[in-house]
Image (tube, rainbow, N blue to C red):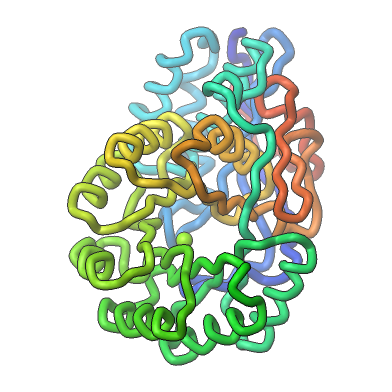
Length: 366
Ligand code: MG
């Protein structure tokens, strides 16, 4: 299976409702998609969203990095898989979203070359998962209504975005909890929007109300590891590190300094599956549970994340793969099927994706 051609293009999928966090507001998923084609007629698919405020990656930077890496991959054999992964990471530093897109397509082809679905190549696991759903920051009334709507379609885990105003944030959580009741798991994501003092005040206040949070995600700035340590040590609610952990080295630092109780793995931060596997191994060694998350992604990269989560379900105990559930349409033929909170994996080889509707070619590398 020799790599002959790499197509780089774009997809545009409108969101059902605008996605609002402490950092940004987004109306549609506009992701870079790559298709790696081989001499045997196989296609490997990959995807990368431009999440400038988190990863530093833009459309143009992703295309540039994929082009640089892609040129090194033409003519190489999928059988030399480790060499290909080394090329992805040694050709350019940072640019984790572009690396993730390329890696996902390579893992897709590697599993196809074995005629097995990716999660089985990664060791096997359940073919069905359950994700939470994100509730965007908005007026309290809108957030309560969105939460109730989510429960109606089968979600029992909600990730509430907060982080704009501490008093309002506490009121948001209290109001949603009062509306949905104690049987719905509430996760809270501040997206670095709080200070250390605000975090301690808000979390303790919420705990005083008797609300048991599944976790509080990234309350303070990604680089404020000392702040994360203080919060983790002083509150009962588990603290989850998201933006603080990109690389396996970051995971070692956060875990050994006790700056979080849970680690959020996203392929767009790690630069793909190979580094995600290293972080999973580190977490396993230190007995730290993981969540798998996603950016605003359509379905290709989320399919890859779901296969990884299935194969590592003993350590990835929380799933936050709601990107496709926020999209108004599904551009994929094949891949995961999402039905309410259920994610069903395909048993076709690789990621099981055969076509992307609305793929607009930007350039190809031969
Ligand atoms: Mg987050």
